[in-house]
Every structure is written in C-alpha cells, then in structure tokens.
Amino acid sequence: MSEKEEAFQSAISERARKALLELGLTDYEVRAYLALVEMGPLTASELSELKLIPYSKVYEVLGSLDEKGFIESQQGRPAKYFPKPPAAAIESLVQNIERDIRRKSETVLKELLPVYEMKGGREKPDIWILRGEKSVAEKIRDAVSRCENELLVAAPVLSKEMAEMLYGLVLSARGRDAHVQIMVSNNVPQSAVRKLAEVAEVRIRRQMFGGGIICDNREVVIVFQGGDGPVLAIWSDHVGLAKFAKNYFEYLWRDSKKVSR
Image (cartoon, rainbow, N blue to C red; front, top):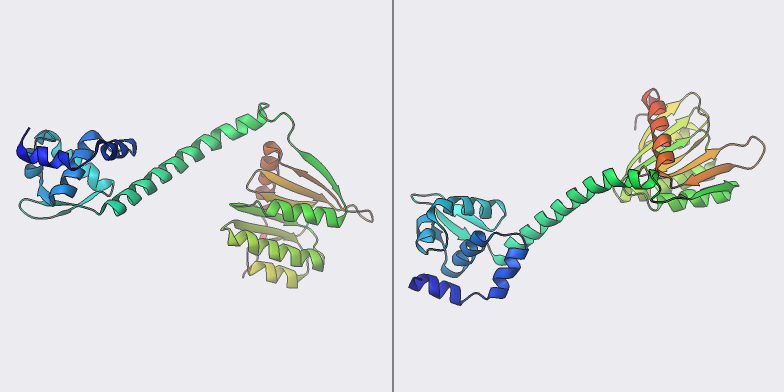
C-alpha cells in the first residue's frame, strides 16, 4: 500500500463507505469519490496511481460518477476531475433513487391493481345507492377530494347550486394539478358553461343519458335523473366499473362540440 493510499484511507470511516455502498454506489465509485474529496482535483492517471482503481476501469468509474452527479470535469490535457460538494451529491443521488422507486412502483401498481381487484383481492368492492340531491352532492364532494390526477364530469343538467359547487370542486382538483374534462348537454345554461370553461376543458353534446363523475379511473358516481322523483346515484370504487364508465365517457367525448375559453 502506497503512502498516498494509506493517508487517504485513514481519514474516512468504514461506516461512511458502507453508507455510500448502500445508497447505490459501487466500491470503485466510493473509492474514487472519497479520494477526490480528500485529495482535491485529480486526473484519471493520478487517480489510478493511487492503486484504488485499475487503470482499465478508471474512465468508466469517473463517467458513472459524473452521471450520478458526484463529480464534474475540467477539460484540458489531461482533464481534471472535481468532487461536487457532498450535500449536493447526496441530494442528487436521493432524487434519482426516489424517481426510480416511483417509476417502478407505478409500473407494478398499473399491472397488479386491476388483477388484484378483478380476481378477488377485494371480494366486495363498495357500492352505495344514494338518494336525494344533498346526499349525491356530498358524495361527489367526498370523491373529488381524493382526486389527484384526473377528474371527468358528465352533466346533462345543472342547477345553479350544483353549477357553483362543481366550479369550486374543479378549482380544488386543479389546485392538485388534476386534469379536468367536463361534458354538458344543451340543457345546461350558457352562463354556467362559460364559467366552467374558464377552469376546465368543456364540451357540449346535444343529448346525454345520465351523468356523474370519474376520479382517477378508480372511483365513480353515476347519477340518474328520476323525472319528478328524487335524484338517484350509484357510488363505487370498483375498478372495473370505473374503467367501463371512463370508456363510455371517452366515446361520448370524441364527438362532442368543444367550448372555447
């Protein structure tokens, strides 16, 4: 072991080395980064001379550290490599790990959740029957409060009170960066249509049979207008029902007339 290598190793605890390994760096990457932190900027040859990394691997290791946000280089003959501040390097690594975990989690959930729901993971998804405009409105508010990504609304009719409530719900969903699409019939007052078009993408159909909302393709409220009787609705978190409702919504949406903002 050379004198340089011995001095370098003596300043870094095994605990810190192990932590970097557990965060995803390779053994060679840990050796290179710690050497640069401890000794300052080095060329690839100088780093190799410390006998920490085989010369055949040194450029590969430095390239990987650069990609992970741990070092930067200064062009020259030869090029020199500088360590980034540990706080910045670790923050960059943590962000990359979090992005990777989210991407992999979304892949798993996208494929497994429908199978789980349809094959009995939840043997009895909730289905509620709602009666009366007040009960339906409360359930719609409750469902929209959980909406994070997408809110689809079909409204064949809208009372003044319901239009005002819907406007507020759209604003709250948009505040969570949810994408909102609203489909209405010719029976909805133009003043309400124009106001909703200020905060969401709105389209009009000549005729609609029933309405409701779909939240994040996992929760649905289907509303039936009962003529002279009370408003009736079904709420469910059954994935299959929500998917069917979304497909029907998209079918109607395609040949509906766009409302300009």
